[in-house]
Image 1: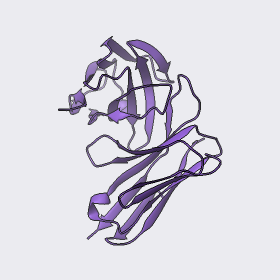
Image 2: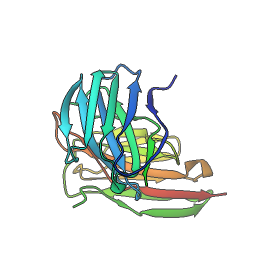
Image 3: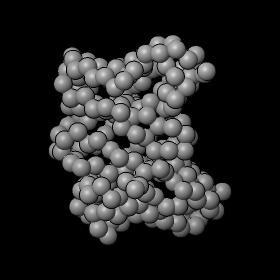
Length: 114
Length: 112
């Protein structure tokens, strides 16, 4: 019973391509997030959705577009991929964005842009 | 500017040794969390501390939140190889729609 799942686990693609990463949580949480972890393991938030509505959008290039069809799903679409987009992308969810923000992370998607 | 500074960045010890990892900031946090991340996996929540001076124990792990809620420490007693991983602290600065701010992590390697 995977709480937060992501697909694919690995994604290798060329510069200029468009790709999507999917995320699903079965925890019944209201809030979902996308994080980017760089090669130095620094974890930085990209987006946050609460009940399908975007509530946080950090300084992320507009080539990145999140979409939440329902509160259990948050997908990430990336246009015109660049070398610097190579990283591990984590989806996460939390029960209540007003309290302690305890995060439940997915296994990550390792994106390699060549 | 990194809001949460973790030290040390890397720690390599032998099984059975004790260690302490620190998470420091000049900002006040309403709560602070510790996560452990193993290779190829996502971070897993270990503990949340919310009260200044709070101490929580999780088996051989002891977590402390500073009195002023600006810093935290993680102490591991008699480390085991299974403790190997990246330890991340993360804090919440404000209430309402806010976000977690993560430190850069401490990579711990425990050798048999």
